[in-house]
Amino acid sequence: MVNRIIVGAHYGLKDWLAQRITALLMIGYTVIFLVVWPRPMSYAGWKALFAQGWMRFATFLLVASVLIHAWIGMRNVWMDYVKHTGLRLALEVATILWLVGCAGWAMQILWRI
Amino acid sequence: MPDLTAKKKRPLWYNLSPLNLPLPGLVSILHRVSGVVLFLGLIAFLYLLDLSLASESGYAQAAGLLRAPIAKLLVIASIWALLHHMCAGIRHLFLDVDIGTSLHTARRSAFAVFIASLALTASIAVRIW
Image (cartoon, rainbow over the protein chains, first blue to last red):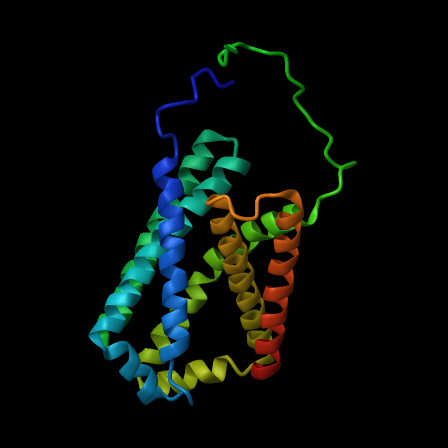
């Protein structure tokens, strides 16, 4: 039962906007990646690509975008299909922990090179 | 002004099965499915990135893993999920700024999303197989 006036409180506007901005960033990264990825593929070329400062910067933005984008998307999925509040909260927390952990892992991969 | 807080008697269950799911609806649900697939595939992607950047032998190991037929199938499925999600997402971005919102155009762009993502997936699949 919805017992609130659903106008004027920006319900979800920030998430909606973040979803779109991160989508554009990921599209931009894809375009850049298709231009710069080493052809033919080799370990040396692959490593050299991610050793560059700007590539790490761009990949960091990609990781941050995936984190935010996937969080909003997965939260929407949990909100739509999981009606049990406790279970939904657990799944949402697990999603956040998992995504933040993955982002940390990605940073470790990039800055270890 | 309608009272938005009024308690109305609403049906609790809609039987949607007699309705056809139109093409834009199919694109929409596959957008969601492909998003969840990509979320679940994140770990495999990170594992391969980690392995391939760790060392020369790690790179060879990652390349070896990707040569198995089952791995190729999973890669092709992931590429489809990524391409469908991206094409449907780009369509969504246009719809958000009121481009292509007429029924006719929306149906055509939904069709284009299908064809584009399947054709791109097929062209990549042929190359990596």
